[in-house]
Image 1 (cartoon, one colour):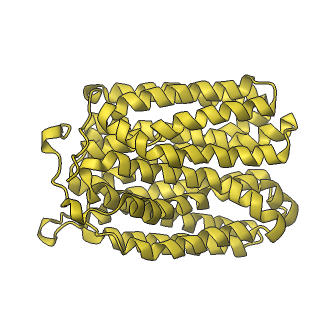
Image 2 (tube, one colour):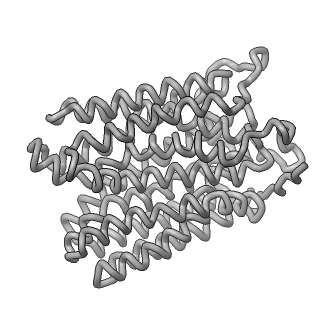
Image 3 (cartoon, one colour):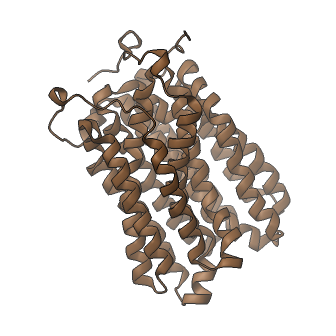
Length: 408
């Protein structure tokens, strides 16, 4: 199977029918961000679970990891339904299931209800995410870079903000608060999705549901899938170690919490420009630069002697991620056929969920056994090695790019 060429770019909607970029950011970006925040809220409340519910930190690690595993499974199994004319329906059902899981986690006071709630939440997020990406890609394909940049940056922003939401709400309102707030926010944003025209596959063109594994035969797409996962190796390692390392170094709590919040902000402001740059400069080139630099930043966190210096380096890291975070998703959107976009994005999301879950567990173990320098070095080397594999797979599409559509 070959890469889709630039002169075969999909036909776009008339300019007047294209959704506003701000509607895409608010409706779909906001929705994706809140779904991702549901993944992230657990990272900063491990101590609260230990203290109030007597749940061991190792058990919470399992809860975190199993949510990623559930998302990994559903992104593979259910994304193809969105390619068969059911994208909006998959989004609605996925959000409802995700919120049900969050509410169960809010109500739970022992391991099993929280574990089951996490599985349900992961299933819902995994189903909705690829369908949302399909809708956004096909809403305006020739400007997919900036639109997908908005969406994916909001996704990562939400994931990074999850720990900050917990840090702010758990103290005054208790452990259930962040789960309830994220769930209610998801439901509030859902009606805005109805305002966007959804380019569903026409009935006579709908193919029998099939999984997206066959897309991996497209080597550049396989490379994009690997590179998308590397991004979440970086994020999973960063989130898992951030609060632990600042506690170890005696960093003021407000600095540690502010760092998580400020790290997420450039992802929103630079995401659209970064997606546009990925489309025009080349998604694989931009991904290579961003991920190789990201490994360097992670290595630096393990070597710097104070929390203040780590905070300063993290702000530089945030700028780098803000520009490059959407590159792998843009690459996939440019490579695969229109009628396989949800399945393709599901494969990317599955790769991200799997690698983030594995890295969060592995990083915590390495930190406990060998300390922060080795833990950060483990994440950095993993980033570099897996990035090299992804770039090797994508070498035939190294120069892939697409001009931005003219307005008018």
